[in-house]
Image (cartoon, rainbow, N blue to C red; front, top):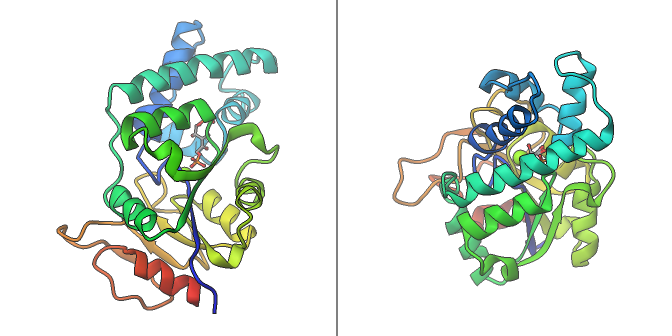
Length: 251
Ligand code: XBP
Ligand code: MG
């Protein structure tokens, strides 16, 4: 029987709702500052989230004719400015962790479960969120921070999960992923991982066929109880606890 030894966490939308009020706003600040006639409103950004990776997202918007064309170097420079704006927004402390994230991270850490990050976002953006929303001690508590361009193919490709597993020497059957989006779920699934999904405003309409649990959030013991959207293992739950993840991995 497989045991839960490792949990890999997605970042944007899973640890915190960073997209609408963080990344989106930072992109718009960078476009404005560079004199580019384009702003991504909340709904447009939701469509663009189908493309993972900020530089790739800009390229997609250019290719469909909604942004002026520019060479890769300009996209990369704009994205670097966007990351700086994002770091400032995060440093202002305006993006809290999602409910239950800290509780589950702490429970798993105390139980000796290996913890890692597996994300499409840029390392500098990830570092800002760890420092300002989680706390600096978590730089040492995560055994791997797999992020951004470290692999050529971003989610939904499995590469970033495979990279994290390889760095940890962890087996997929002992590892569970926490995700919020269809692209994230596909990536984790393609890497052979069990996956729990916490949806958010941008992803509640996504399809997660085959996911091990889909809920509105991880929730808190003293909260109202989470909305359970898919529960193929028939778990009894009010909030998501470590023992639920252990049950899922045991199969
Ligand atoms: C989500 C993404 C990222 C962010 C923006 O990543 O697709 O591209 O939207 O980050 P995940 P960058 O859910 O895997 O954390 O601009 O740094 O790419
Ligand atoms: Mg995500």
